[in-house]
Length: 384
Image (cartoon, rainbow, N blue to C red; front, top):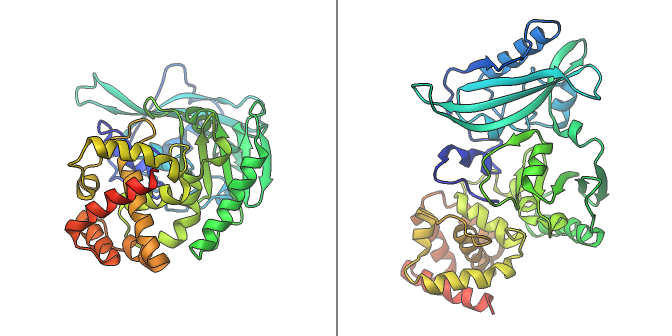
């Protein structure tokens, strides 16, 4: 899971698995306009556009039950708008660029919308997302519906254990790898004494952009690295893009499985990600595989400390994420000494860097000054 770039500070909401259920940016008055050639006057275009405009103008909140949406999908997904945390981040300009019957779907219309930031002069437009939703008839009225089940209805589906793997028909499926991933879910839940979801829907392709497109997100600024994953912990959904490890991208699964463990704790973001990286790896690599790269970086940067990482973590460089990987080591150190109670204590220490480090020091029985030395020594040992 990659962090948002500094140039796009609001995107942290979309990149955080918890954001889908909790983070909301204060909304401004929403302006919904229509692009060239879009029919909003004829029947039923007028009613569908009015429905969509009303929904956008309501300043959608990801946590609320929403009567604009399909009752069938509301029963399936607690956060029914699956793109909520991506596209509603305080931007106020929405342009409907397409509204027309959906090809191959009865009584269904496709709506494509551009959400962007517009300068005060109106001359500069910075797009955040181009995305699609559908309008369909249910119980005698038009309601909104997600792209995901419609765009993946002809994909392959393989259920192994608690995981329902969904992937394009052209995608090769490595069953042995998938079986190990299904076992990982149960073993992780057992280790952290939580009940895993009965089903986790796991969508994967070779490219994260392609996977998110299947969810309806046709454009979103992911940067140059198209390998990665996203998770919706409340709806038990995982989206993966990886050409080499598609069935075994376990970082996002760890987010879903461990959410009951963390849900009541005030956990620092990097402690959360460190926990997921220790248990599920990152960037398609296992925790152990990440260690040599972490050691090389720290050898070349002797002034890096845990506090500096927690305060101002560097951007990801390839498969190295200093925040994720470094805090993963700290989580392992704490667990090795005190087990699950110690991890719970670290996760409940709060979000301030000093509070996190004080909690780690107490559980490791070292002074804060000694913590960094112990941490670096542990990384050397793990990288062998």
